[in-house]
Amino acid sequence: MSKSRFTAILSCLTRTKSTMVSITSSMVRLNRLYTDFCKETTLHGLKHTVAGDLHFLERMLWFVLTVFAFAGAVYCGVSQLARYNSEPVVVSIERDYRGWSTDFPAVTACLLERVDEDKAKEVIYRIWNVTEESDSERYQYYYEFVDLIAEISFRNNLQNFWKYQNDDTVKDIDLLQLALDVHPNFQPKIKTSQKMEVQWRQIITEEGLCTTFNSEYAQYQIVDDNLWRSQPLTKCHYHSEACFVRIDSVENGARVTYIYFNLPVSYSDVVRTNFPPKN
Image (cartoon, rainbow, N blue to C red; front, side, top):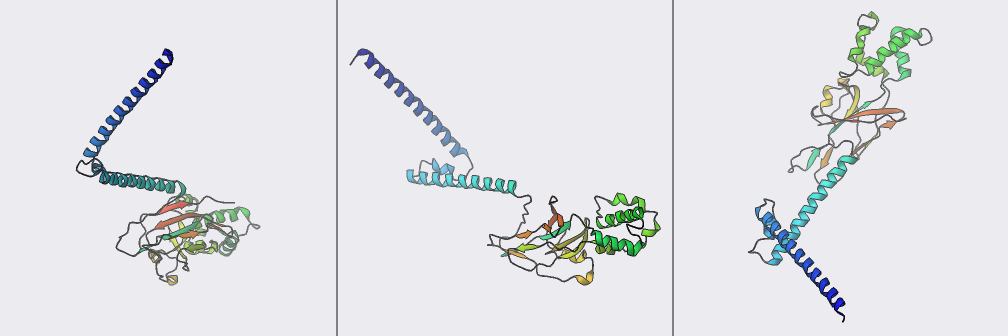
């Protein structure tokens, strides 16, 4: 073997040994850092992985359990993030784990377009004896009034009634009945996980005329007290993995723009979902 070749092999072995020493030294420092961290941390389980009074297999078992627990926590976090990004609204209800069933939230649906043009024509002619052909300007004036009544909202359009404040022709009119007379004949179609027949109730809210189901509070909002019939509330079983209500927001040309969720026996903590109009 030539001297140069021997020198090259010796140099390679020296570099390899130096690398191994460096790696070993780094591993020792890393192990010391991990040990110190596990002894000081309040995270459950980690201190058992470095306990000197435990057998090696016991420490390995604790290490495996800790890794699985950490992986489970990461999985839950990622799942919740994916759920947050994929669902427009997630309704969560705190419940007593001792109870076997939980009341499903009340659902209230409001239409985007709450004036049926054919009905509006009949109402305008019946009340004011005006048609679009006979007097288009007056017809448009009253049509805007009807539209304001049908779309009335505490937050949106009350300020638009100023131009009718001195008009005697719009006084002494049952405004609720007017809104009912021009409202489209529409009830959203739904499908529930319990396959129950749902009865929508027409109610008056701060957003105008809407329909609701699974709400005991609706008896105070219903447009006609004689129409109120109490129904058993939809419930979700504690072990049910699929408890849902699917609402078709577009049906027969009528479009739902708002879906509200609140507790069946109250009208607080309302969550609103906006459905964009579809052509």
